[in-house]
Length: 398
Image (cartoon, rainbow, N blue to C red; front, side):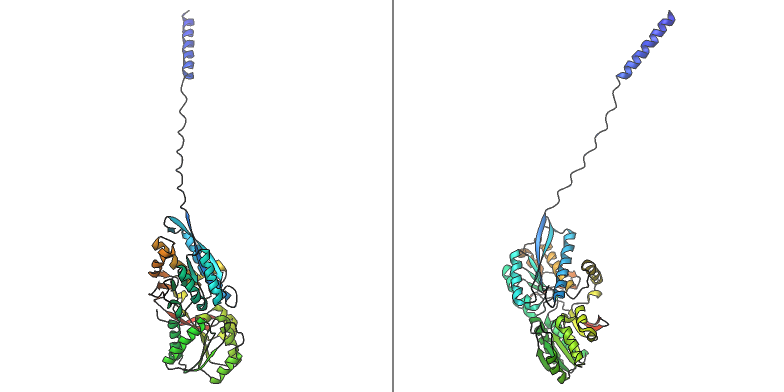
C-alpha cells in the first residue's frame, strides 16, 4: 500500500513538472536592427554654360581644336571637383563654336553664344576675330578671356569684359625685334605679314624694336592668310639678301613660305612669333624647319611645375600632343571658375569684378591682370627648331 502511494505521489510530481514546463514563456525575439539613417539629399546642380570660340575648320583648324580641347579638359576637371556655388554643385556645359578665323563669322558666333546664354567665353583664337567679337560680349556684359589674341587693340577699347592670359604684341614683338638685332646680330631684316590683325600687328612691333636696336628693314611685303604661293615675294626679298626674315602669320602659311624660301636658295634666318611655333609648322616646312626661330608668350610649359603633367593628361585624353594654346585655354577657364567661387555666384554681373582681381597660379604660371585686362607678367620664350622639336633659346620678361 505504501509502495502504491509512493508511486502515485511520484507520478503526480512528474505530471506537475511536465505541466510546469509547458507554461514556460518563450525567449523574447531579438530586437530589430535600427534603420540606417536616410542619406541627405544631394545638393541641386547649377548648370552654367561656358563658350569656346576658335577656328575648328580651315587651314588652322589644328590650332582651333587645340584651344577647344584645353577648355574641354578644364570643364571636365571642374565638374569632377564638385565645386559648390551658392549651395549648388557647379556643372559646366561647354558650347563650342567654329569662327573659321573670319572676322564676320567671329561676330556671328559671338552673338550665337550670347543668345545661347553663356556666362563667359574663352576665345577667340585670332586677334582678327577676337577684336570685333569683344564688342558683342561687352554689350551683353559677358566676360571674355582670350588665350591667344595678342593684338594690343583688343584690350585698348576700354571694355571691362576683356581679358587675356598671354602677353600682347608689344611685349612679344619687342622681344623678337630685340633678339633679331642684338642676339642674332642681324643688320638687315625683311618683314612679311599676312595682313590680319595678328600678323600685321606683331610684324609692326618687330619692325619698331629691330629698328630701335639698329637693324635696317630692307623689305616690307605682305600676303594673305590663305595664300599658298610665296615665290614672287620671296624672289624680291632674295635680291635684298637680308640677314633675317620675319613673317607675321600662322603656321599654315609660314611652313610653306619657309620651304619655298629654301627651295629658292635663300639662306636668311627665318623667324615667326607664336603663330608659327607649333608641331604643324615643322610638318609643313619639312627639313627646312631646322634652325627656324619662333616665340611663345609665357614661360615654357615643360619648365613649369604643372606643365609636364598637363601634357601627359592632354595626350591621354585627346590622343594628340599640345599644339600651342591649350594650356592657356585651360587656365582661362579656371580663372573664370575661381572668380565665380569668390563671388559665390555664376552671374556675370557678380563674378566679373572678381575676375579683374585674379591672382591665380595656373599651368602657364602666375596670372594677374592690369587695369586694361592685360597679363601683368608678360614673359616671352624664344625657341629654335632642332631635329623636329623646339628647344628653348631664352626667356625674357615676366
